[in-house]
Image 1 (cartoon, rainbow, N blue to C red):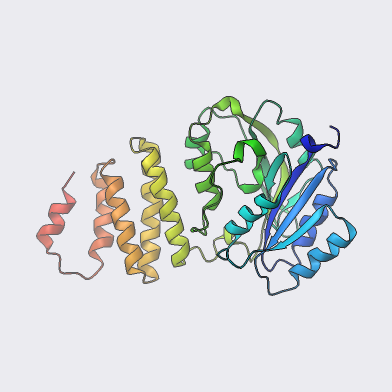
Image 2: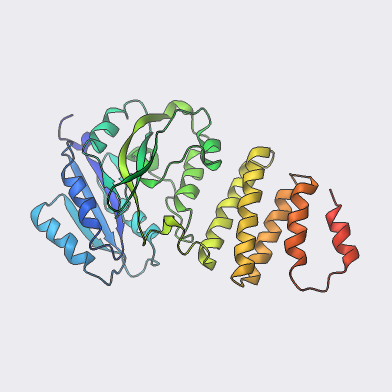
Length: 318
């Protein structure tokens, strides 16, 4: 493919305190066999040497561009991702994370499989920080991309999705109000009403999805109030889309129930009530004692003036 605007790929990376790890990420971009790219990094007020590390790459290769998140934008990776998109010029868009690593054919393969599609998806290797592969995920074609993603049968993350810029123009991008599940929320919106003919599937892995001690995705900080709020936000959206789908309702029930347990354990009473409210909504579509009994038990463990008679009435309200 010739080096013109129609082959220019914009790689968009939010950055916060990843001075050591982003070196491998940027090296993997420099080693791409497809050479016509720009890499836009948006720093989120890093307090380590991240900014200086990226500046050194820019001095050697002007395809890298570095911005600071504007002060009028709320701190967070989502605003950095959206701001990066505003600064980009590529015909194609691929958001990428600052601690993951592309295989050399990442861009070339995605470009090869975009013809006739608005976006495509690829697989990945799940690895530790030494690139020891722990598992491999191969993307398989599905008919209902939204449902399979909500059920987490289609296990795609931000790096997996390669967009035509024209498909994204005019659409709200990452929601700056949430800090966990942001890609799930974005894809849930973008995949609504998407014709299967608009999506290409690349079965083989094209990058390393790196897990390390500082990864949000490895479970650390997942019990914080902000993360619980974010997950509830995503679960509510899924419920609104599939209120009659038993398999999705069961997944949502188990997910929200776990959040309720975390909220109780970490003393977040307001979030606990929010979890109960959402569970009650789910149970309105998913009757059965096997779902109500666990909820009754966790509710009963919380001191309140509700009488035993009321609890029994609630238990048998099917």
